[in-house]
Amino acid sequence: MTLPKKGSRLITVGGTSYRWRVRHKPTYDQGLGWSPMTFGVQLAKDPSSVLMVTLPHHRLDNWLYLEGASVRPALVARCITVALSEGWAPERPGSAHRLKVTQEQSVEWAVPVVNPLYL
View 1 (cartoon, helix red, strand yellow):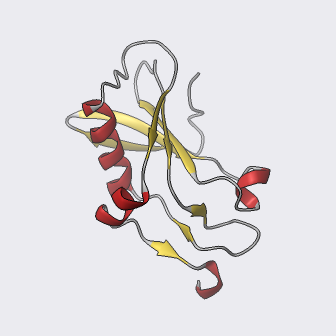
View 2: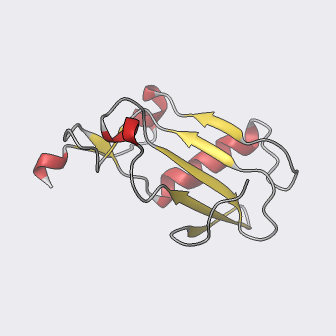
View 3: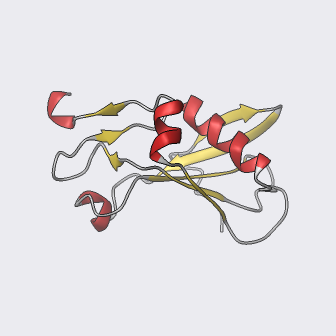
């Protein structure tokens, strides 16, 4: 499984280039606030294994105007670093590595939470 290049962004962490992407539109469950925001990361060149990150926040474009969070490059870099320390080998083929960011980590990493009604 690889991420589509269209709509993805490049980031370099530790001298290695990665491509990351948030889904363009929310899934039905994300739109209703039933499931959290997710994004994927893979190597920019010769992608093999994908990192799937789950955040403890709603998407900002949810349909019920629930508080949500935006994904910024600093957060993506932090997630890549944590996943690598947990054993994710992006160059090795295999199933996706899953990283679930906890509420405590989110606060510690200063993930901005916003109410879309005030945007």
